[in-house]
Length: 222
Image 1 (cartoon, rainbow, N blue to C red):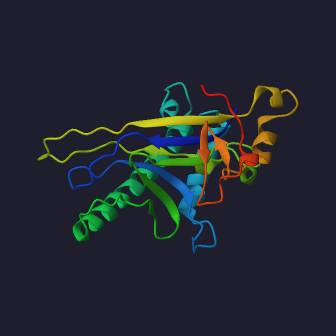
Image 2: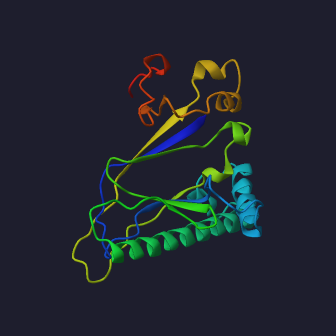
């Protein structure tokens, strides 16, 4: 019944050479400025892997390695994790280059692969990334591009600090009373806006245009 997910970062990890791997990875996310017009072979393979897992009701790669599941499920999950690891390494390399030039307090921006496929969001306290797990673009079904992974925090051998990454996840579900009349896919198709609205109990605004009280969605706190 989930349609939207929000990941909030409760702790700011140090930005230095000792702690660079701290991202949330979206290997199939596409930049709006992408210049590649057609699906590449690797992208098509990634989408097929993600869709296979969804079709087998596997919504987390941790579930995929159950020995009772078929080999193609294991292979698909492993391939997605390999792709996520590749994006993570590229994000780390970009962060290292930035820190070499500028070691100021500015947080790292989200990393987007140069060809527009693959994104890595750094953990910065007070920030939040919200995304659709179902939307109109996926026909209300689970969107294969919403697959994501959390990169482990890695510390260099000469570091005496041991930081950790704390996150808070919130989910937006289709209300039970609406599901009595229709399906979750229809709800997702009709509720595909994040701005302005309340998503997962969090008020989403952009710039100065999100203050209209009439557009607020009232939700009871958990």
